[in-house]
Length: 339
Image 1 (cartoon, helix red, strand yellow):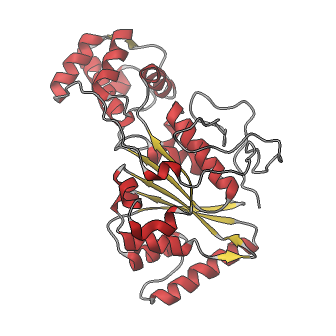
Image 2 (tube, helix red, strand yellow; image 1 turned 90 degrees about the vertical axis):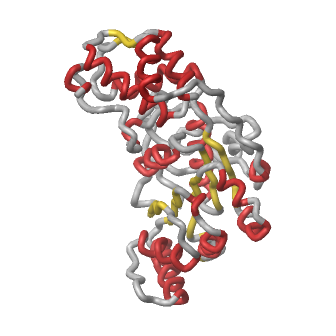
Image 3 (cartoon, helix red, strand yellow; image 1 turned 180 degrees about the horizontal axis):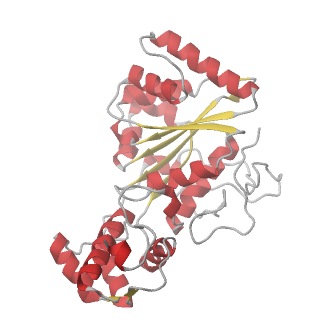
């Protein structure tokens, strides 16, 4: 309804993650640096966590859109509460393997054979596991075992683990010490900062043909941030309702009063964002080898910028590929991992 009233070409604030609307906030840019660093290394685990609605799925969707399928075979699974053997089946099926009814040993042989075949074709393999906080320890351990497959001293499978903050607590378990030693980088997606909410909203609106109608006042942006703590999904839900109100009331301007009215209708109270407790993972596997800016998947050599450090330290951003967001690097090209 509101898209027609305001002449928009789509609805930019739907709750379903859509990488087309990817916006590179400071925290997403840092996470993308870690993911790019991980792809350059070609081994180990990368752990990305964030609260519900922080943009983890959109981030990975954006990354997947930049990957050259001729150089990297990447698959994604959204985990449920499955045990170890079921996780193996999910991983195998994600790679297109028919494993129904097969015992665990045969499933492992099929996966290893597939990974070897990909390596012979010059492709690396990446498994992305979303909603990892739902996994029991047995399933996480099976993922670690999959990372053991090697050819000529090179790892055949790299794994990205995405989850809500409680996944950080799961990884502190004594049973997962070996996996922790293979985590080469970790990052927690924070909410957007107050000064990022306006660019975020404008970015999404601009992608569907917005030309300034409706106009959002500075008070409206401030009220949206106060009501949502800068969490992208909360911002989407609130702005979608604001645009609906605007269409119904035929508003040409969205101001602070409109935001307050929608907040009251939605039962939203202003609240301070909760801080994320420090994790033992924040000091895991601090990368020591230099990593170059990623351009066509090739490293530039020993004079390149250093790799991303632990999340408590400063990280220089790595532009992995053209961003659908507002900070794409001019002339950047799709990521092609080194062979």
